Amino acid sequence: MEPRLVSIEFQTLSFTNSKDIRVEGLSLNNQMFHIVINGCHDVLIQGVKIIAAGNSPNTDGIHVQFSKNVAIFDTSIKTRDDCVSIGPGAKDLWMERISCGPDHGIRTYENMLEAVAVKFDCSATNPCTKIRLENVNLTCRKQVVQSICTNVNGQSVGSVHPDSCL
Image 1 (cartoon, rainbow, N blue to C red):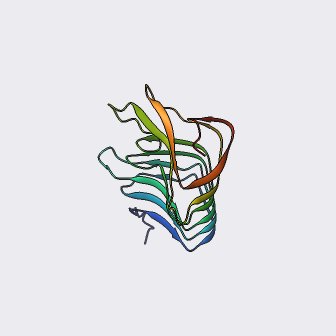
Image 2 (cartoon, rainbow, N blue to C red; image 1 turned 60 degrees about the vertical axis):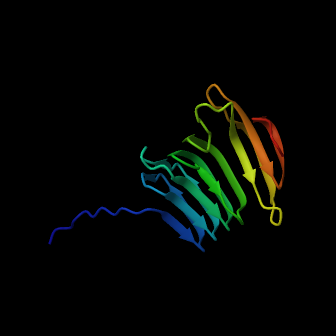
Image 3 (tube, rainbow, N blue to C red; image 1 turned 90 degrees about the vertical axis):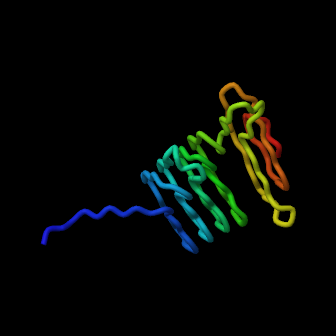
């Protein structure tokens, strides 16, 4: 019998209660969440390309929750909702060189005077701590960008645009 190639389609690549995860050079084109990191530690996501079809209105690129020491580098996320969504219990999340859009990572909504480029919306009972923004430059075409922070403690280092709310 000759070997057959099998195509597997999935909604989400999900890691739960795992450690020492490394995802590199992967390309995904799904609906819903693309990658979920839940209850994990020591995670590296690098060189990943995520694309959601234009008719997939509620897609998130990468969702991180209840996880520690997660790094996301050199990744392109083109989704119709959040590029990277940060849920409760996310600690030591480090992100660099992420191309994000067209929606909530860098918002390009028409008829808006201001776009929210950075938003930390944390709970009063479990605030986000040790947040560090370093050399951030987020812009939207023909719009003023702003940052919004709720229940966040941290620092800004170097050039940060929009002005940091930390």
